[in-house]
Each structure stands twice: as structure tokens, then as C-alpha cells.
Image (cartoon, rainbow, N blue to C red; front, side, top):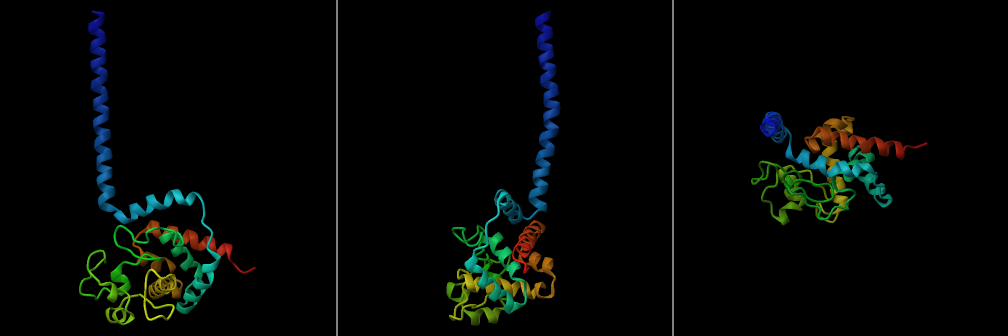
Length: 215
């Protein structure tokens, strides 16, 4: 009789375990589906990528500050905003390679269609397009298709992999979307449609504003 009771108790434990486990698994599966479809996958990747790195702060490279200031002054935006974008996008160009899984390129991670212009006949979707390397860096082509790429160093080429060109291009973009008028949040959101991204950029922007403020 004792053996039967033990077996009966074990069976009841297994049944209760299954009764508890199945709803938990269903809830977790549902949440996973909601996260996948509601949130931008790029946003999720960005959050996973950045969170561990925010345990410490990278120093702003001193040699870059004159470039930030030059590009930012040209387009009337805070240079610290440009530095914040550089920090978030490629950790001050220390990422290797500077090409994202979705096709964003260079120091400030421009999608080709944003850099060259969405009027390019191959541009759609996320903006990778089928743009030749010659077109991608040609200021005349960029002007024709309404892109944000800029030849910042005056060498006749607008190259997202050239830091000066990339900074001028990012400053151009941010300026046109409101940063020159003080609407930083709108400009940042247009750069990457993610509230997490906006918060991350603003974190570093305020950090650098405080760090480099004039006494």
C-alpha cells in the first residue's frame, strides 16, 4: 500500500508540474512573438549590442574634436550631438568592419539610399538599394537623387568610409531634420527610428555637453 501511495504522489506531482509548466511556456512564447513583431529587429540588435558597453564610457578621441566642431558649425548643430552619434554608431570608428548586417556603411552608418538619395531607382525597403560604388560616392549623383552624402574634405568624393565626409553627411542630415532648430529628438529619431536609440544618443550628448562645457 505504501508503494502505491508513493507512486500516486509522484504522479500527482508530475501532473501539477505539467499544469504549471504549460501555461508558463505559452506565455513566454506569446511574449517572444509580440517582441519580434512589435519592435524593430534593428532596435533589438542595437540594445543587445550597446547595453554591455554602457557599463563603461569611451573617451571622445581628442583628435576628432576639431572635425566634429567643423562639420557641426557648417550645419548649425551642436558638435557634441555629432560626437554622440559617432560614439553610438561605430564606437568612434573602432568597429571592424564598419558595415552592419542590414547594409549601413561607414563611420556614421548610413544606409546607401539615405546617403545617395531615395529617389535612386533601386531604392526601397530598408534602403540598401543596388547602387554602384561609383554612384555611391559621386556628389553629382547624390545631388541628383537628393541624398545626404557630403564631400566634406573637398576631394571630389563623398565617401561614408572617410571620417570627414561621414561627419559632414551626418551633420547635414541632422540639421535638415531639426537639430539646427534645437529639435534634437526629432532629428535623432529620423536618423534611426528607435526610442532606445534616441535615449542612447541623448545620454551621450548630455554627457559630452557637461564634460566639455565652457567654464
